[in-house]
Image 1: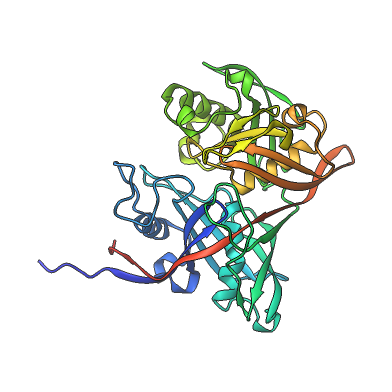
Image 2 (image 1 turned 90 degrees about the horizontal axis):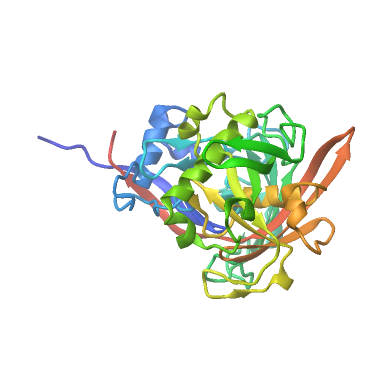
Length: 393
């Protein structure tokens, strides 16, 4: 029996913030994968190595974590005033599923560099030295991201001295602006989908929880760590090794999704793993980050841990950081309640890998809270480029 050869597809493997993913130009994908549907999902799952019952992604490009099981598709933008369209797929690890319901804020930092390097930005707008501004249309959620990418010698600058907790080596700083990041078109079209900054969420087996549910950056539900019997200083082993606790978090996520209008019933949560996020917050405390670096209570406004794809994230998702900064700027939210000494317009929080500072501009208009933009700095670089090989379907 003759077996067909593997497909060879041009691709770039990139780190963006504290995530990694496989980047494609839309035009380089096989024709049947250039449009949404089963063929595209099957291709990306095979690239990553999912579904993998062993949970290792040995036979693919994935890293068997929510931070490293990602694919990105980039094309010239069809939106006026934008350079590129950016589509993000979160590939499940042990199930045959690609979640297209949200954005990846960390990989957003790699989109601008990828676009410049691949000729998707008008060459006349790329300086010999300085900063190139790339306007990105985030196609999953229909929002604009502006990336300020450093350029040296007419090429994307990747080396530098910008340090990001959760990333081992320093690199060049990429500044991101998330414009009008609230309201992703779901949950009633409001930043606070229930119309309240705090709600009581009844979760069978968990209890009645005081939560803040917000659509900003990514749909997120915030709860105080103490309400779950947690300290807020936990690292991955303490959470991800506790199956009963993970089940409680998933129950919270499912019930919040229904209350936020993202799902009709909790049974649909299994097919929407990427959103909403669940994050637990606490007042500032001393703790030791996963790298061994001490984090002092005096250096942060609050502590935040966030769940991603059923596990505690090793650092912080960029989109969730937008939600944190936005919620911290609104009086009365669960996040604002535990914050201490926060400077106007920005918040610095502690996460499992260290700390992160994010700015947000929130205001009240006709009784409704709005956020005009959120700003953060990340870094990005190419890890490998060439062709990814995929077994034909």
